[in-house]
Image 1 (cartoon, rainbow, N blue to C red):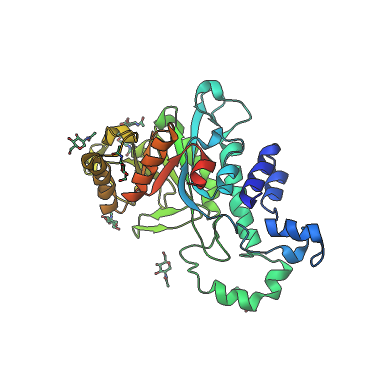
Image 2: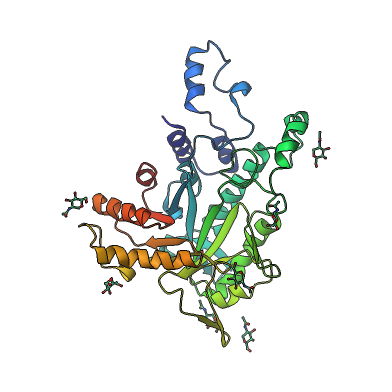
Length: 353
Ligand SMILES: *[C@@H]1O[C@H](CO)[C@@H](O)[C@H](O)[C@H]1NC(C)=O
Ligand SMILES: *[C@@H]1O[C@H](CO)[C@@H](O)[C@H](O)[C@H]1NC(C)=O
Ligand SMILES: *[C@@H]1O[C@H](CO)[C@@H](O)[C@H](O)[C@H]1NC(C)=O
Ligand SMILES: *[C@@H]1O[C@H](CO)[C@@H](O)[C@H](O)[C@H]1NC(C)=O
Ligand SMILES: *[C@@H]1O[C@H](CO)[C@@H](O)[C@H](O)[C@H]1NC(C)=O
Ligand SMILES: *[C@@H]1O[C@H](CO)[C@@H](O)[C@H](O)[C@H]1NC(C)=O
Ligand SMILES: *[C@@H]1O[C@H](CO)[C@@H](O)[C@H](O)[C@H]1NC(C)=O
């Protein structure tokens, strides 16, 4: 059994609790199991000599995949991380009665336990906490002290003014590949958005979120990039105090058209747009069953090239799930024409694509 499936199955087998999160991230790779069977060289699979203090997400290879409706999975966030996926999505509802944010596909799928904080933000935070602890950055562990000379040389090579935090998929020091969270606001955008910002603030204060500094017009990368989609109100988003830690999911194929906030016209650019998305049907009538015609291929590549000319990454959603050859045809063409994110419902299928 691979590390990934072991990770996934173990996590799925038990309820998500803090203890489980910690243990799941410390599972040993296959090699340790084999050595344990012989017991000849190393004293068992749990032996400390087989544990790498850093490189803790080793054997997980990040893939540019977006886990669509991530909260539907057996274990949200962790199943995606175990598959190397670095973009996830939560559908979020503000309940008018208790002003709490809940996660679910529709109002009938909500439960009091499944809050945005517990189902999405806490597991994400835990993942980044552990990456930073395991990688000895800002750590007072005996190993960190003992290897301070070697670690300081390496640490000095990373740009600590651009990031002081290690990302989930970092091998050793440095940010590595940031995670991306799409927050799909389902309830009224103007009413819900302030609650979203409020519950993200602790993560921002900890240096865990990518930020846009309006004074310098620069992005400060962080381990997690937050993107508002669905009913996210762009008028509130662009007026957030600087540094702003929420980006917008801009309309792919329509980036040339300005948008208006309070009577003032603005243009889309990469300081606002974390990504640009649209559904496949809005740009082409191709459904992946036959080979795409040149025109159909061009429908897609034109939209993607436009976003890239703005330095904005792309995602095309509502791609077919079935028949699976149509799904694969679409994903193959999207990769060929340079789409940055592949939207996926079946994570194990896309991980072995
Ligand atoms: C390593 O760097 C830290 C932080 O800059 C410093 O406090 C410490 O003295 C350094 N240790 C060594 C052995 O250079
Ligand atoms: C480090 O990052 C900061 C902020 O992004 C940037 O201004 C600076 O030029 C970078 N320094 C180096 C040496 O790359
Ligand atoms: C910020 O920088 C981008 C390019 O990186 C540029 O397109 C944009 O006009 C700048 N915005 C401001 C307000 O200077
Ligand atoms: C939020 O309010 C503004 C101003 O009233 C309105 O123009 C905008 O459409 C609203 N946005 C959403 C997503 O509801
Ligand atoms: C838009 O204009 C209204 C009325 O002038 C003002 O109350 C509101 O704060 C403005 N909103 C933004 C996001 O600037
Ligand atoms: C796809 O491209 C063709 C040929 O340029 C165009 O006629 C058609 O409207 C495009 N389809 C969509 C959905 O934009
Ligand atoms: C689709 O394209 C492939 C590869 O170019 C080709 O082998 C196949 O015959 C084509 N299928 C159809 C139905 O045209």
